[in-house]
Image 1 (spheres, rainbow, N blue to C red):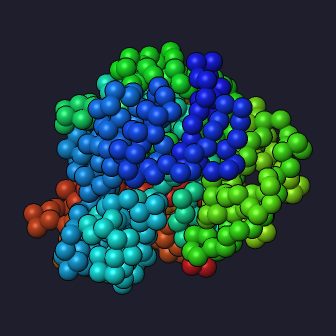
Image 2: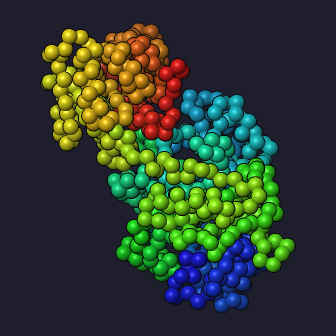
Length: 610
């Protein structure tokens, strides 16, 4: 539909398409076999097609762009060699490693027994991916070693994904919010689109199995200007340069699945095409002529000024068949009261087919429709999409959709306070994470009980508000903490971080801020609780431990006894002394704080009774 808007386009032939694709310029040809490149070329020549935009991944991997180019037909999409970035996850991971693109630790296997030994040997949770194309279903997130071994058997022995699972990638499971970043590519340069956030799990609250996507919205606030600049330079352009160096300049859409971790953005995957449901919330915002952009990409002359987006928001909700992503029903009659749909709302068809009656459409897939709403604010877009669904203007029997699309984006940045008495090294990491867009938070105030504590200077150097409280005039700990509480309430704080805070909190303070105060301890609690600083590290060495780390925990009345939020691990070396070990552990504390803050934002904090 977006191509049909171009003044340069007389008609758009869609193959195979679906009966829901309608429009004055649009013609659907379901008879074309996309797996036969020669048939595609013949079809294009017979219908006098002047330009081809390739959508699905399989034809790209099969080299349809190369076949069209050989026939003299310009086509928008990567070559067969370039499409390996999506066609083989093992190839993609090696490409990222070769060109310095941050991604999860991984190993690739074609031998089942070797893969099993690997998952048994690592201490972290893993993600298992079928290396080949598996229609978006070849990624699993096992929670235990036994589950991981079972998934390896399904893929490599039982061949549930056929040849796609003959090789698997096993990678470290990363924590953080995800964002999809798409770019138009001309072989040398890339121009980014607004970031979109997809919702992969089938049920609300990110519960249930993974799907191809249950909804999305754009622009996603998680992709801050600083983070966008980092992704543009260190991921997208680095991939473009790497493709040139490796001999397959990339033309088309490069889609990077990004996870924003506590140590910065990392790439989960590259795709070589528009993905859905992200496309249904990105392209409605495109102000420029899509056909002109694609032509410029193919000619190798794309300018950033050619790609302009509206200053609006779009939210899309997927309607899926009952049972999806497992076995699902088909043939359910679709209701779509087009004449009653509000302005700014579009219904996109995916798994639909012609029904028995003229003009009747029925379900024919797992994900059937996307209801997409465009408005001047994200809140308004989300509201409109759900209002149309609740009004029954679009739907079918057994339709399932999530009711929390975009919910996390409507939450503002978490408001932090920091209590500290020392240098505040971990505070610096949190500041940097916010500045670089890794963390959607604001530090409202830094409070200290020591007038010469460098944490106050550090905060002031970054323009942060600081408050010094002393025991003067306070009869006891409770009265002092009451002053601190008054300050925190004045700044409307959500979460309190203890960073080198050399005071024991009163019971009254702990009760007042229950579930909203976190502290770092330089060991893997519950081991070595109660100790401080170098003493803890020396105890670890004396105990002959081979692994140590740090723990972020909720603060309770029991010292170092609160529920664990995050733990980070590192090795203990034979030549370590307390100072060396402290330096290694301290490097983990900042990322641990950022991960814990994100867990607070996502409502994933443990209960006080944990």
